[in-house]
Amino acid sequence: MLLAIILFILAGLAEIGGGYLVWLWLKESKPVGYGIAGSLILILYGILPTLQSFPSFGRVYAAYGGVFVVMAVLWGWLVDRKTPDLYDWLGAAICIVGVSVMLWAPRS
Image 1 (tube, rainbow, N blue to C red):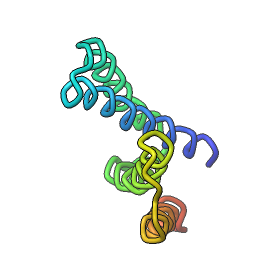
Image 2: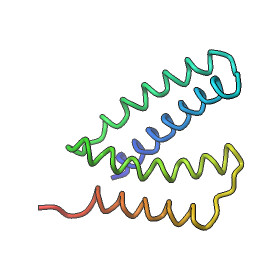
Image 3: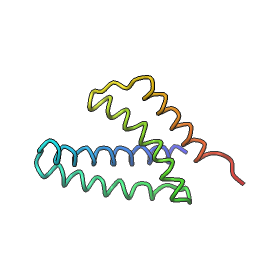
Image 4: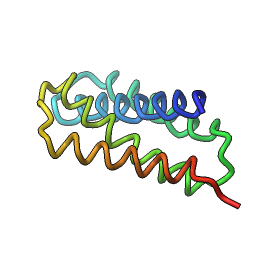
C-alpha cells in the first residue's frame, strides 16, 4: 500500500509540475526550456501509473484522479499562494475517501 501511495504522489507531482512548466512557458512567456522540461516531465507522468500493481487501468486512473484533486489544492496553496477554503478541503477529503474505497475495498 505504501508503494501505491508513493507512486500516486510522484505521478501527481509529475503531472502538476510538468503542466505548470508548460503553463509558465505559454501563459507567462517563460523561455522555451520551460515547455521542453514540462513536456518531458509529463511523459514521466504517463509512465509512473504503469508501475502500479493494480490490474485495472480504469481503476488506477480513476483513483489517481482523486489524488490529483488533493495535490492540485495543495499546489495552489503552496506554489500559487491561494489559500484553500473549507469547501476545497471538504472536496479533497471526499476524493480521498472515494479513492480509498475504489482501491482497497474487499472484492470477491
